[in-house]
Amino acid sequence: MTLIRHATPSDLENILLIYNQGIEDRIATLETETKSLDEMRRWLENRTERYFVLVAVVDEGVAGWASVNPYNGRNAYRGVGDLSIYIDRAYRGRGIGQQLLAELEARAAKAQFHKLVLFTFPFNALGQGLYRKAGFREVGIFHNQGKLDGKFVDVMAMEKILSDQV
Image 1 (tube, rainbow, N blue to C red):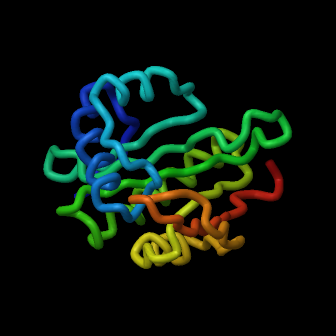
Image 2 (image 1 turned 120 degrees about the vertical axis):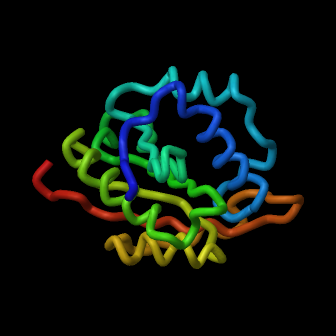
């Protein structure tokens, strides 16, 4: 059984471990340098209630985490959230991401986000499968968007409208 709940400072070591796996595996982020506990502590402390972080707890351990992040500081984009999802290597492909995403969407809608966007690598088939299954659509490809290990890589933008009424 998976419990999805808001992240707390006591989850930070596990969030850090999982995020650093994503950095090391080169499948989920253009970040190349692993993060420290202090960096992640500041990241969590500087978040507002609206830009929340969720964790998926399996057998009393954190198996993954997800967050809604600011997309753009302009007021016109207040209803658009950028999402991140990271799953521990040992739990990938087990439906944890799907559960996190469903809860994240529900809470984002309550926080008056009308749309979620994300950026993924075109070669991250597992991630794209998760998002497409949840109703996200591909918006386009940013060619040579950033460098990863000294080589330019493309980044795919995806989106989902949560509500036209917000």
